[in-house]
Image (cartoon, rainbow, N blue to C red):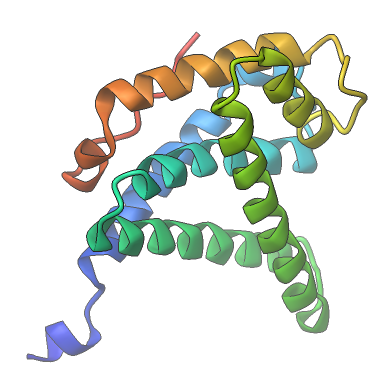
Length: 177
């Protein structure tokens, strides 16, 4: 009985496995060397957020309670990691909460912009979102089209895999270059 009271919820364990996979994919050297994502703290943050947002959007599309719980647990796991990372970098306790709130708002904004751009027929929308968020650049940044192709391929592969596979323990099938 105590295990049920104090043990991890199944969605938390699943979210941790998903998050570990997302971080591994987000650290792929080709994202930085091949696609021009800045190899900085901010660039790595953007890649984690991007990949996590793709998974969250896939889960939200299921419109199931179990998927919502997993999506929330994934979000919580990501921000627990960000919190720990900031503390390791020496950010004081009083500053961490403010930064986490700011980052959480940024995640939701990025996820919504990604969702909207991915549903458009015009690839320029996704390129604009990526140029602004990942590259902190003008919409016509030369790196954005290649990253947009990567994201569209990842979306196609995730759509083919389906959110139910993620609920059942599958790892997100992102594009590997």
